[in-house]
Amino acid sequence: MSFIQGFKYHLAHPKTSWQLVICGLIVGFFAAVAIILLRLTIATITNFYAVNNGDFSDLAPAMRLILPVIAVICILLMVRITRHKFHRMGIPFVLYRQRKYYGYIPAGNTLNQFFSAIAAIAGGFSVGREGPAVHVGAGSASVLANFIQMPNNAKRIMAACGVAAGISASFNSPLAAVVFVLEVVLRQYRIHLFLPIMVSALLGTAMSRMVFGDIHLYSDLLLPQITINALLPFIILGLTVGLIAVLFNRSLLSIIKHSREVSIYIRLPLAAVIMAIIGWLVPQTMGSDYGALTVALTEHPETSFILTMLIAKFVATIFSLGLGVPGGVIGVLYGIGALLGSFIVWSLVPYFPQLIEFAPMAVMICMVTMMATSLNAPLAALVAVLELSGNAAIIFPSLLVVVPAILLSQQVFKLNSLFYAQLDLQKLNYKVSPVIYELQDTGVVVLMRRKFNLLEASSPWRTLNSTLPTVIVQRGEQGQYLVPSNMMGYTSPDLTLVSIHTLTDNATLAQAYQLLSPQRKGYVLILAQGSNVPVGLLSWRSLQKHLHKGRGY
Image (cartoon, rainbow, N blue to C red; front, side):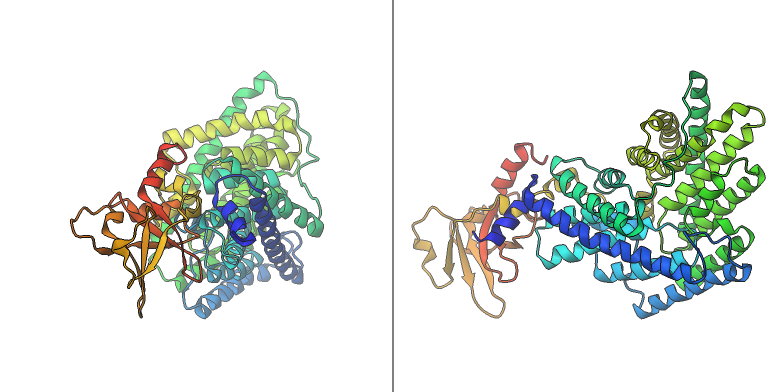
């Protein structure tokens, strides 16, 4: 076995290995480079018209009106150039490809996401950059994994590594990125997944800090001591955030549902008009979350203005994303949650002055609770608030808010994760049976039998005296591989040759299972990538033994 073959063999195993970690590092590097390039391009464009850190409030009213229109013109131009191909983008699309295609994302979709996101975010739309970061990170990993011909099970892990590197490079929060990938993207916790995803997130954060600095916007916030009297208000705060999250999800999904049959040449200009009007009236709503967080963390703000901005941000976001503007939802959920927390606390301050010291904490907790409830990612939210604040004391009050919000939204209103609800609405079948999902973790080279007889069709295969399986090569314009009928489980008295299913050696056990499960007998022939030379046989019996050992089912 050559070094390359041995390297890929270890990647095919669902076990922690240095080969997997090295690949995670390489993927993390390329994904981080792509995200840094995305962020620098957006910053360069916005600095051209004097928008620093995503703050559009100082722009002239005329500029606020025209920026969304220019952005939509650029996006529609890309639609024309790509001839309406590669139109699916964002985190839901990545989740779908992760489950159905081992994380493979066409390069065209990735490039379209990259340039469309630049136009949308620089144009002031109320969308986040983490959606494009996830897509571009996973797309970069996909291109690299295909280039070096990784096993399919490793490609799925590399796509997850790209997502982790993308999120960590965007938010400077490596641990939250790891948890988000495990909780939302993979939806499983396996030991062999941790290390490669961790090193990718770590490298993404390190490279981001080299370029943008180690910035934690909320590390200087003072967190007051929580007393027993504050328990009930925090629980009520959680219930309120849960209600708003339900309203947000259902409003956004309703707009997507009623506009999906409308031409993109109508939807996007309509989104530009709505965003331009809202941005002209309330400029702080433009962009992802900077303007909203700046207002929410202001001392003694006007509650009427916060309410106005909360409504405006809510409406701008659901129409921007609902009408198809490419962008993420996490950043804007942070902004809406922060405004909601600020409004609730400062509305109660006239009656309960002691709440003033809790205002910054409430803003931060509501910010991540909104994300946790909408996306069904409570653990990722708790880790995020810990990294953002740099203070472990915030975990307890965060739990007091997150738990009621999640319980109310899921148990009472049956709220599903926004990402998976979008896939259901788009009729993209992302559901995979537990057996298939488990078998996707292992490559066929792990179980295949490497010793077998390989004969030409003219050879006397009937008289061959061997206990090894026999494969017959039939040459011709459409050459195929045949095996004796008894190998495939047929009991005919006359021994004949029958065709055999083939897979390349980067396939997974799930792909072999799908070929063999209808008959529940026989073999699959494994071919080397590129050369199509037979390298092994995988039997239904071997799959059964693997399943019964508890590794899959």
